[in-house]
Amino acid sequence: MHETTHLKEKWSLMLKIVFPILVTQVALYLVSFFDILMSSRYGSEDLAGVAVGSSLWVPIYTGLAGILLAITPIVAQLVGAKKKDEVKTVVQQGLFLSLALSTLIIFLLFIAIDPILQMMTLEPRVESIARSYVFAMIIGIIPLFAYTVLRSYMDALGKTRITMIITLLSAPINIIFNYLLIFGNFGFPELGGAGAGYASAITYWLIFLIAVGVAHKLQPFRQYELFKNWTSVQFSKWRDISFIGVPIGLSIFAETSIFSAVTLMMSTYSTAVISAHQIALNFTSLLYMIPLSISIGATVLVGYEVGAKRYKDARTYSWLSVGAAVIISFFSACILFFFREQIASIYTTDETVIQLTIQFFVFAALFQLSDAIQAPVQGSLRGYKDVNVTFIMAIISYWVIGLPIGYLLSKYTDFGPFGYWIGLIVGLTAGAITLSARLIRIQRKKREPVL
Image (cartoon, rainbow, N blue to C red):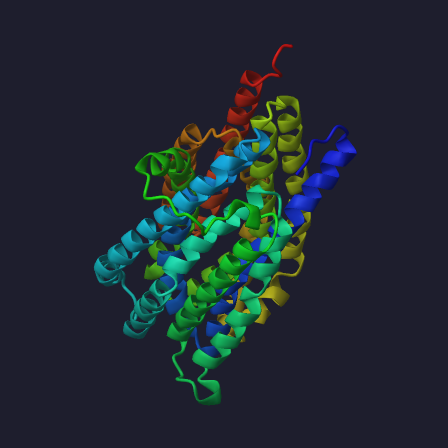
């Protein structure tokens, strides 16, 4: 990365940083995308089972892995402040912390999965598939978390194209193993929905090993010698990472878990409704990769400028990010609204599920703008290392406002399951407004130093 002086240069650098991140995020998301898509081709029960299993897995992973995203603003600010000698220690301790978090998740999933599934009124086969899917995913937790650290470190150095190339490999790898393990082709066991979990776990191991090789061999990563002269565990560094990372992780958890909570609460509806909801959520989550990628890019760029005490440039990057996301969200909403039937038909041939999905897509189109604002605003706030208030705002917006409204509309109006999506729209809108107000306040506090 480098200092920019003109708006055109800033646009150019932002696109240079964000585009590879977008490809990376889409590639990572395609792992779960193809889990859902290929499971739906195997059968509706397998789709529902993978949907429930994914709803349990995703918020846990994204929440705790979100803690490790603190590596990005920390390293970005160290590089901006020209303190490169401290980068290696931060990343090594991040890897130690990722192992500890992975172990914690594995333990929690083993003791909690059965009680959670038994609380839900699922068909026996759907419950069995969901359990098998989650247990299969456990195999890939350790490499997935470690890769999150390495990816955050590489992104912070501005080398987002490298992480893009590595992660791009995950989609074809996942498709191949899904083809082998879901459908039992070429002599492999036919595991149905559970096979999607094993395919994802194998994929996570392979991209982690590739990332280790890149970090060890290629410049500019090689100069940091990440895997030489390992320091012992330093809990002070864990504290520093967690001080920033825990609010980030909890904010992400608050956002992602609200969608999972809706899925779990909708388990009282038919398998067709659950399947349609999951299809709509799956595709809209794919579209969300665009504002999410802009958000990550904003964290890198704003963090770099804040580290160099160029607060005016940091402010400019913040609002450039929001503007870009809002423009793109308009096209995303149009895609969802005008091509909703064609998109639904990609996932399933079940006419009942298709018609329900079409209705869900109408509501999904409505919250594209709110998503487009709140995501880059959150990313900018992380670049300023302002994360605690953001977490509180996320909790209030999604859990205190969004979910209760959705529940009331679903239970006491004719909206039924669609009431939950109206609640999501209200929650996301509240989040976008409050986070934007917070960003403006932080920017007013941060002014250029007087020379």
